[in-house]
Structures are given as structure tokens and as C-alpha cells.
Length: 59
Figure 1 (tube, rainbow, N blue to C red):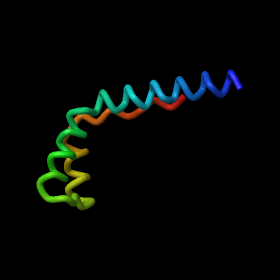
Figure 2 (cartoon, rainbow, N blue to C red; figure 1 turned 120 degrees about the vertical axis):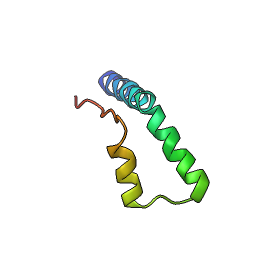
Figure 3 (cartoon, one colour; figure 1 turned 90 degrees about the horizontal axis):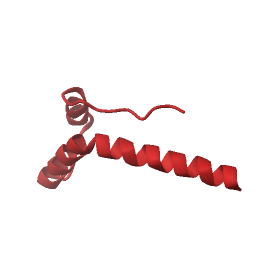
Figure 4 (spheres, helix red, strand yellow; figure 1 turned 60 degrees about the vertical axis):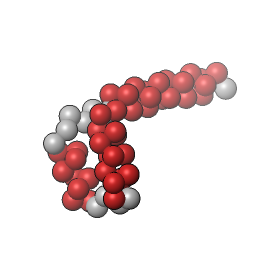
């Protein structure tokens, strides 16, 4: 049970850190969605390609 809790705590921290590191990109995506309600695959790819997206480390 304790190992599961430790594992979950580590993964939660990693997820939160990834979201924080990508805040600028997420804010841009949110603004796009507020403006037009949908973002197609091409627009999403352009957003990701033109911004510094941080990936979560694999542990």
C-alpha cells in the first residue's frame, strides 16, 4: 500500500511539473478554444511545432 502511495505521489508531482512547464502553450490553446471553440489537428500541430513544449520524463 505504501509503495503504491509513493508511486502515485511521484507521478502526481511529475504531471503537475509538466503542466507548469507548458503553461504558456496551454494558455495559447485555451485562447484559441475561447475564440473559436474547436481546434483542428493542423492548428494543434502548428501550435506544438512553434512552441517549446516540455515532455514529461519517463521513469
